[in-house]
Amino acid sequence: MTDSGTPQRARAGSDLRTASDSWLADVARGAGREVGNVPIELLGDYLPLLAEAAVSGRKPDAVELDAVGLLGRRAAELGVSAGSVVQLYLSAAQQLWQHLPAVVRSRDSEVVRTAAAAVLHVVDEAVARLVEAYTDARRQMVRWEETLRREFIEDLLRGDADVGRLVERAEPFGLDMTRQHQVALAAPAGRLTETEATISSLERAVVHWAGDRDVLVATKDGWIVAITPADTDVPGARTGPKTLGDLLLKELEHSRGGPWRVTVGRPYLGSYGIARSYEEAREGLTMAVRLRLDSPLIQAEQLLIYRVLLRDQPAIADLVQSVLGQLVRARGGAEPLLTTLDAYFATGSVTTETARRLHLSVRAVTYRLDRIKTLTGYDPTDPAQRFTIHAAVLGARLLGWPERDFTVDR
Image (cartoon, rainbow, N blue to C red; front, side):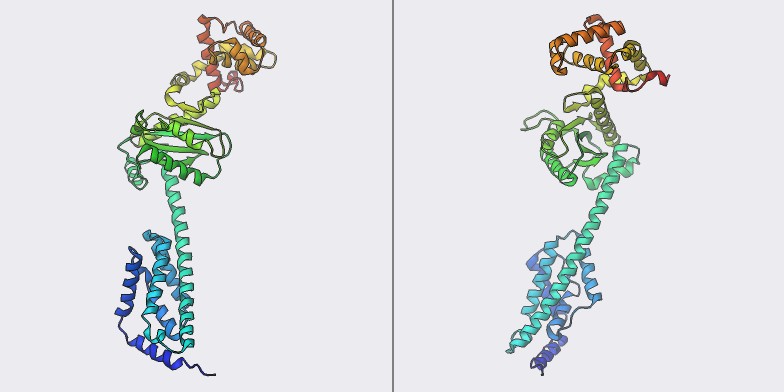
């Protein structure tokens, strides 16, 4: 059997081979205009492949497809969207087909059908390789960006990196180191899941709330870290949450891993200021856990008195041991009595409210307070002695007593 279209396809091939390169260049420019803002250089040798397939039926070889893959990677590096570069390739194929008069106008339907099948085969393979390489390149770029972001955040919060270099690295993330920033930490009660979705959603909310792109939200040590300019966290006409801490609690309310506790450091200037604010927020989380604070939002200013207590740990340890040390002799140990004191002072020394919080009878609370007075010599109900024993209770919580035995440390 002979191919009736062979002479016609041969003549078409001869016509294409004698045509100038401007023919394919015109097709490329036309496709570029149709798609808009996509470099036509990304077509590479794609159009000659289509033209060759149309007149000879030749399929692209591995080397030619690898070249298309390199163009896909280049598109990703240039920031061209996958949809745009694919549209460029499809538009180019459509316009090239329209400029193949010798084939398209053939009266032999078999010739047209064979040419169309060959062109579609090239389009299919080329676009598949283009998208595959583009996706792989984007995946690698995202991993690299995540690595850079993670390393930058580690150095930024640690505060001991080269300041000049840190300022340069901050620019791609939109952080202006000449401004005051504050850091907020959000800690879930459970395990943080769906991290990427949570971070993306929260960052959008913070940017919208602050009205400023100078925002960074990330994770560290299982916590969410939010860095914002301090001058956005002021009372004003904005609707909704008034502070960064309020916003984080509101946005994270329905996220997995909750309930959440948020602490906010005070604002400071420069890269060292961010590290300092972070340390305050991190210390706030630690103190909130040790002190068993009920509030889900802790501001650094609220914990200043506790930081004062911790500045002289030997002195506070001596106070705890001297005032509360004898509680370990109580039946059941010191913890039940310490918990009673904790609740008693938290309720403003109201016995009935203390009993309600501890799910005890008022008589049981009164008995415990009397037992504390007997063992320690300090009366929690006496205003003159209340400050001393309250300070000792706070010190015990901060230092982890009675789990930690100070007698061993001496």
